[in-house]
Length: 85
Length: 475
Image (tube, rainbow over all chains, first blue to last red; front, top):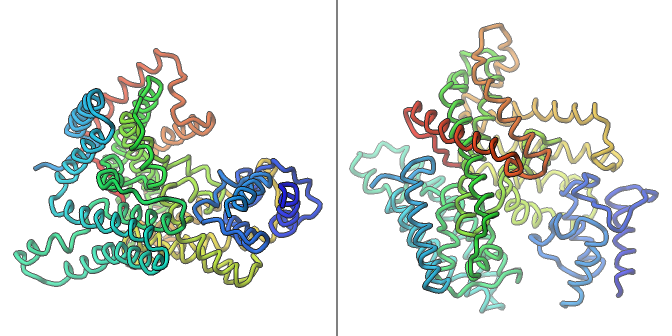
């Protein structure tokens, strides 16, 4: 699975489940949590999404705003995790 | 032996001797010798608080060190070993939080109480070093940290004197690697560390000291006899007192630690500029909030989301914040008022989560100003409700709430403590606007000189005026 495919799935999940707005013009480097667009409590949803969508467990202490603030960062984290498996 | 408090001449002397030894040893011996010196100094510091506290710390240290290695070396029994290690930490802390106060409440002879002292009085800092132990074990089991085989380094992780009594909470995976690096503290680091110490003196020594002298919380001593307005005003000033006292304390210890080349986590970030409760907990006692988020909220929330991934599912919305804040309340002290405090804090976060579901997602910058103002005002109003059980026992909390409903009558209030609030907010404003907590380093030298002299003199004067040293031990 390449980065672009991961990114597309992350974007689709973010627009549908987190923003609840499929028409939102989301950029790949747009801060989701630090900008207040989504509250940080939604990070748990991101963790479960990655578990089910990519069969990858990211430990709770690593699900942080610093690591996963933008769709691009989330995709990179998933890519790195899949590479380690 | 006299206990070394943070705002004292003894502490300055202790830090200077420890720092001198640290750098002299660094000139002739490798890094492990510096760590051993720091550990000795930390144990001496703790010993001045109580020799029996030291034994409890040594026991918790040895247990966590051992379990860390066992969890790493026995993958097949990892879960069982992790549970045992975590339960050991929780049981030790629970004993002192619950068992100790219970025995103290029995009418035992004084001689018996003296004998039982090591087993019934919560050792200072234990609430912090047990959480550090738990996060260490969990991180090893999650394979995001490896156990150290260096007992001195691990002991220092739990006992390091700047963070031992009241935090901030540090993660072993960030703290331990620093102990294996050769330390070079440059001029910029020294300047920012000294600035933090100075800001800490201003907050804890002067602002909190003046608050304490003006006795802002007097109406809260007997809420049933005070009117609602006096109580609200007292609660406001007490919140500012706690904020300046605790954040000032943290600034001082972070500054001291910076002089040793060991950075500690920032613990406060303009909490009174929060937009809601969730935001507040990312600005107040940050290291504890992050710990609770990583080791309570996230695992609980993920467990519920795995059963039903919808965020609108009622248990997903309610249970994780409530459990997290109840644990926070119990950690602060296993008393009915603190359980109520945790419940209320959790409840308000649940309400915010439900409200957030109904609003379209928009970046914070484009939220209308009136709505941001309304959010801040409603947060403050709810804080008056939620904070009461943190400061008062259950009986007085109920009396406080009764007066909030029925005690509206005009009586003169002590406005004097309010003089300190603008200084506290101004300090927050300078730090928040620049996004730099040591912004004062960028000011002209002559202004810096005036600040250094006036803060030092002010701290000495205010401390002299106080009958007891204003040292804040949290919780």
